[in-house]
Amino acid sequence: MKRLQIENLGQIKNADIEFGDLTLFVGPQATGKSIVSQLIKLLIDHEDIVYSIRKNGYDWGGNSINFMEFYFGEGMRHLWDESTEIVVDSASIKLADILERNNRVKEKLFFVPAQRVLILENGWPKPFTSFEVGDPYVVRNFSEHLRLLMQQGLGSKGSAIFPQVGRLKKELRDALDESIFHGAQVELNTTGMRKRIQLNMNGDLLPFMTWSAGQREFMPLLLGLYWLMPASRASKKSDIDWVIIEELEMGLHPQAILSVFLICLELLHRGYRLIISTHSPVLLEAAWAIRSLQEEKADVKYLNSLFRLKSSPGIDKIFENILENKEIKTYYFDRQPEGVFARNISSLDPVDADTSVANWGGLTSFSSQASDVISQMMQEKS
Image (cartoon, rainbow, N blue to C red; front, side, top):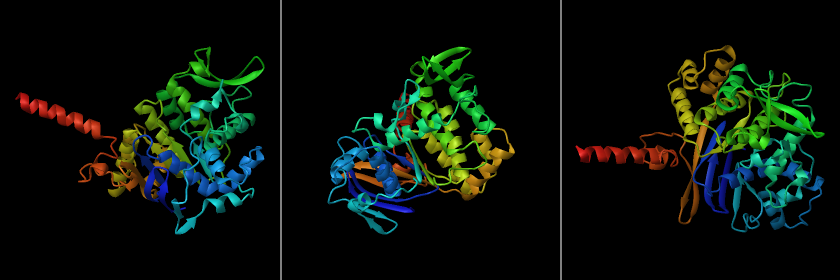
């Protein structure tokens, strides 16, 4: 998929998206970023999705409206109606055609949902069938992936889940430790015959629900990143080409956001194409800085400075690949009286005459407003 065109999908009036290696979705709540992200998953993996739903004992009875509510979640029955038009790379897509296919085809897109904290019930991922019928498919599918990952032995035999040698480069592990875990280890322990993930803080074992909000939000994401970056010599999952991460920044301090974004750059380096929906100006600042460095054909030392890292062969190789080969695009989901329009603001030019571009889809508008108010006050006072 190189280009996706949408008309009349829920609140989305119009969207024309040409994907980069990294594509960022920004915009206020309830402007359809999650709907478009889930649609992309459906368009790429519809055969696997239909197979998985039926394999787990669910049946929408041939009714596409029932399928929409099961896949997108409760209340989404009429999201895709007769006025909806979906075009992928010049080919028009009909929902009925998607639902007719029931082949066992391996999925190509790995989806990390915004509701990820809900999947770790008492420190263990919930199985696919334990969710309510109204919960979105991407939530239950993500949880099932993590459950299988844990069953395969992650964190067993006395080895910590984090930090774990072989899963991430040392520089990335150190960045996550400094900004999120602060010297604590994530371990798999057995309590009352039940396995669960716990945090070992100087010998005190803390259950999942007592962790900080940022640690709880990050833990499912970390497991998802482990799934994408095998401990073996393979650089990536052979069948997975796309990764979607919703609201990467949830619960995290700006420095922790940058640490996680570093891992996203490694995913790009490994050959994945990423889509990230975000409300964080930190990610847009990083994207703007990378684009600016690309335009100037800058040395990797500036990316090391940006992320406060010392030069090393492994990190420099990632940064060289990002600067020389990876394209970043940004789309702003702009709410208007007649609906939401997805607009290309990829230049992220802070002096652009278009305020949507200059303010990065509204993410910097308040800081600009605050500066203007203080400047006005100082002028009037003088």
